[in-house]
Each structure stands twice: as structure tokens, then as C-alpha cells.
Amino acid sequence: MTTHRSFLQSNLVTHYATIYASIDTIKRIAALAAAGSLLTACAGMEAAGPKASATLEPRSGSSVSGTVDFHAVGQKLRVEARVAGLTPGQHGFHVHEAGDCSAPDASSAKGHFNPAGRPHGHHGGNDRHAGDMPNLVADASGKATLSAEVDMLSLTQGPGGILQRSVVVHADPDDYRSQPAGNSGKRVACGVIRPLAADSGGSTGSGRSGY
Image (tube, rainbow, N blue to C red; front, side, top):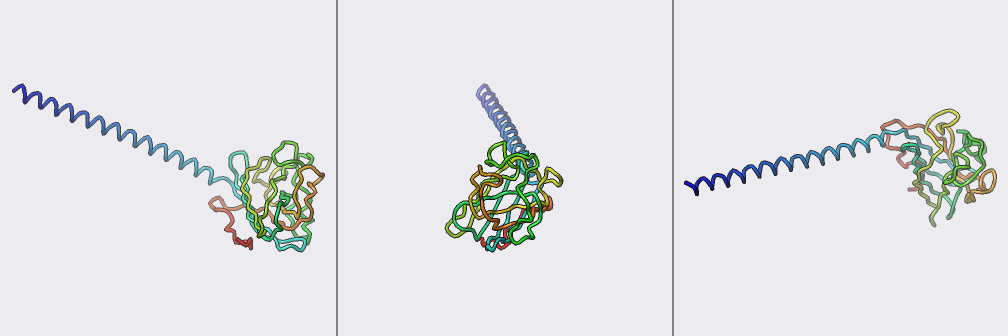
């Protein structure tokens, strides 16, 4: 009898230990699932931010083309550029005041977007034009890509926003010092920044960019 009782007690202990282990496992799985749902929700919130895009058209006798996408990420804008037809090396790249690329030399786009009236400067500084962005760097085949986050810009209309303004690519590098535009030379491509639908994934890259 004592042996039988000990056997039953041992089985009960094993049974309850198995139950508690299963409950602990279920709790861990539920916690992991909740964390995964939170990450997915955060990613969805980022993807739902305002977006805009510009299709670059050649100017000043160039054959430059491409697309530039803008995506709001918190207090900054993510800029994604894909450009072809450039000469190898660096090229000035800016948001300009007017959303008008109609002039053959893109002079209709006016000067750099600069609502605060500051001097031209390095894109990483504070005392600069809002439209100052990193140089594009073209490879030997004339193609350039850029992925960067910039501040001082917003996807809104009006005095402080860049919607319906333009993005311009220049023939030469921006030296980030010379006034008023970094000595970046001719305007070889220009595109008007237009809003995209909230569920759009950005430009398709079909704007004759050569990619």
C-alpha cells in the first residue's frame, strides 16, 4: 500500500509539474506574440506617414532623369533618390523654392528653399537653407542613389512645406560654403514634388531613370 501511495504521489507531482510548465510556455508564447504585434503596429505607423515624389526631367541640355521620394519619419524626412544620366562624381542636390521646372535651364524653380532666410551651408548643420541636402554621387555609369534622413523639411503646403516645390540636381558638387548655392553649377534635372496617396509605396522607379 505504501508503495502504491508513493507511486500515485509521484505521478501527481509529475502531472502538476507538466501543467505548470505548459502554462509557463503559453505565457511566454503570448508575450512574444504581443511583442510581435507591437512591432508590426509601429512599422505600420511609420509606413502610414505622409509621402511625396518627384519625377526628374532633364534640363540644360542633359540626359539626366530619375525619381526622388520623400517619406515622413517622425520629425524628419527620408529622401530616396535614384538618378541616371549624370557625369561620374558628385552633384549638388537641393529642394528649390518654386514648383516650376518649365524653363530649359530650370531657372523657373528659383533659389533654394529657405523659409528662415539663412545662408547656404552643409546639410548636417543648423545655419543653412532648409533645402540643402547631401550631394548625389554618380558611379562610372552615371547612376546615383541616395538614402538619407533630413530635417527642416515637412510634407505640407504653405510657407514651411515642400509640397508643390521642386527638387533640382546640379552639374557640379555643392561645396557647402559658397553663396548662394554652393557653386554647384548648371541645373541638369528638375522635378516637382507632388503628394502621394497614404497607401502608396512611392514611385515605381519608371521615370526613365535607367535602373
